[in-house]
Image (cartoon, rainbow, N blue to C red; front, side, top):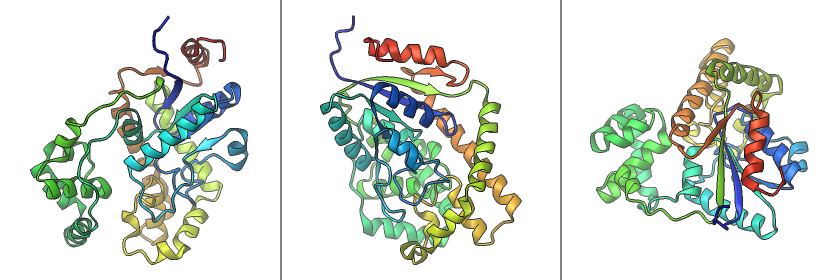
Amino acid sequence: MSGDTRPRAIALLGPTASGKSAYALELAQRLDAEIVSVDSALVYRGLDIGAAKPTREELAQAQHHLIDVREPWQPYSAAEFAADAKRAIDGIVANGKLPILAGGTGLYFRALLEGLADMPEADEAMRAVIATEADERGWVALHAQLAQVDPAAAARIHATDAQRIQRALEVYRLSGKPISDWQREAKRTRFPLKVLKLVLSPPDRAVLHERIEQRFDAMLEAGFLDEVRALRALPALAAHPHPLDLPAIRAVGYRQAWEYLDDASDAATFRERAIAATRQLAKRQFTWLRGELDAQWFDPVTQRTQLDAAVAGFLGNGRA
């Protein structure tokens, strides 16, 4: 038997639309466990349909943490998530229950399980300067600027990812040191729980793409556009000078819906762009997941028996 006496936790990782939330809920009910969401969209109030947030009925079936903890115009960093998640996990363990970490936000998982670099804190004045430059020149131009001073960061940050471009330039300008160097030098601390990492994904990428398309159409039928209209009507968002730069509104599907409601595209183009953006998200998630060398991969549909066996073997006490 293993000599590792740390409390156990299960991490359910995977690309969008892979079935993580459904399996997390099933496990939580079966094991009397609690779910910690590791999703950068679910932290925002009002992002429900488009973020595939658990329904009220599902939330009532198992205790969920880190859902609806910020307004859509409020910032929420990976460091804040890690601190909040650790507090939630400590409470779950103190109550003698199993934490289930479920989501697809790689930065959140890394912040929680591995820790973050002790780099310069956010500087609102510097961020304002960078935002002004972006207004004048565009984020693609600032991404090119980042590539000059930090090629490693630019290679992994998309040219339109305003939040991460801004942060990388902010750190470099404040410290004179590339953010990629800070990240490489980060001091890693041992996570206080023993974690079973399970990646849930169909082996055939075409199957996932079909699920993404079907899910988005279901979201449209459920009133996704009305949800975005309600967000646009919120005074704090309506008055915001650059709502499309907010992390909440940049969440996949929401940006495309916002632009569609600004008459920037027709309905068919909106649908096509939203689905394409979701597939691109899945592609980036796969890139991250392939680096999780200690994770086991299962298709939750066709390999359910093996998936359940991996959970049972990890817990080692017949709980699964």
